[in-house]
Length: 142
Image (cartoon, rainbow, N blue to C red):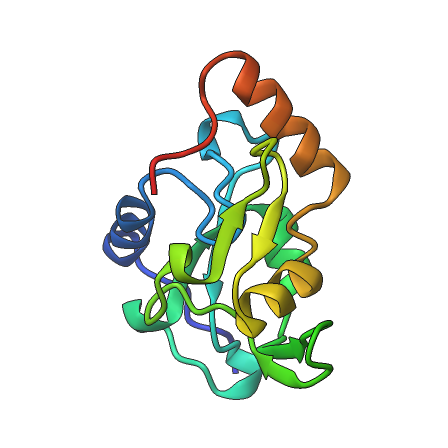
């Protein structure tokens, strides 16, 4: 059976709600080299639906690295924990910036697991953050 696509009104809601940023790494869509996508927090492959409460705005990197994951290993506790869910969790409760404001630090097991699973400190993101700092576009107001 063919997959139903997400309608234009729902896409507009998800994009607007995100304020122009990836809901995981906080990269701005205006400076992305590829269009952002609507990501299923609980993937369709795991019976996640197309309702707005299960959709996030994500850069292509975060979407690809997240894939169908909903949980991952916390490197500190060595326990499997859920990944960050932007619909029910507050970003600033799980993440903070390092002193250079170029790398994310996980404040919780969920934050740390999400940073590792989605590679939120991957080199291109850190480089983008450096460039955005230089033109006064980083860090985002969260």
